[in-house]
Image 1: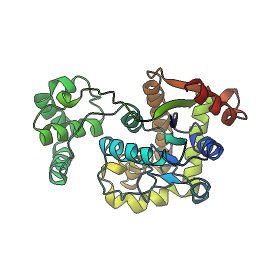
Image 2 (image 1 turned 30 degrees about the vertical axis):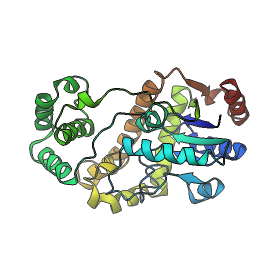
Image 3 (image 1 turned 180 degrees about the vertical axis):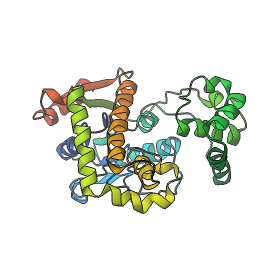
Amino acid sequence: MNTLLVLLGPTGVGKTELSLQVAERLKSPIVSSDSRQIYKHMTIGTAAPTDEQLQRVPHYFVEMLEPEDYYSASQFEDDAVSLIEKLLKTHPFVVMSGGSMMYIDAVCKGIDEIPTIDEKLRKEVYELYEKEGLDSIRARLKILDPVFYNQVDLKNPKRVIHALEICLMAGKPYSSLRTNPNKKRSFRIVKVGFTRNREELYDRINRRVDKMIEDGLVEEARKLYPKRHLNSLNTVGYKELFEYFDGNCSLDFAIEKIKQHSRNYARKQLTWFNKDKEINWINLSEGETDVVEKIPGLIKIHS
């Protein structure tokens, strides 16, 4: 059976170059499973593939949407699965690479049918958040969906706001829509996870942030600043610089926060991925030279 090879891992681990090498070896295109690289004008802050890298291997779901465009994991499931099935008609392997947990699960397991949020409703909820703060959003969510209220990270505005939007849009609790489906796919899935020793991973993350600043992240964020309210820009790298532009902190402080939040996100990714027993892990701290050679063997093991 034709195979989807999922290459995943935390931010900064080195997925991009290894994925390119594996795709070249397998003569496969790359389907990106990064929920931010899908947007245009955010190349530096999302560590999107460079023009040179894009020329090496055909990529999909990279810089295809404007920051204003609404896009969900549910939409990604539909679009990506359809594309993968099409690509597998002419390729024995397709590589999917990225670190967005929900996007990966959407393709590998399927996710619940969540209604698309109306732009008018989205604006109303955001204005409520701006006017009354997160406490008001939390209070409304607690009334409409006490079950999910007790599950969600109440300090995460993005998650709380999204849950309230779904409750209002669906007319029922968000928790009632979360059935955790495990859909069967028409293709075989093999998952390979890249990791590193924590100290090395954190050092790579810190150095990558410094390189982003050197490459022009501040200027990129400044151009996007008028759109700071968009969900696509509520992400590490931009929201810290927006605070700097607002005069709430120094540039050095914002950069340190980007590093800290990136490290926190890497921990969150690893916690999520470690629950998945189907992932075959490769510790890059133990050597990278033969990684590409290991992949075909892992595929055969699962054949």
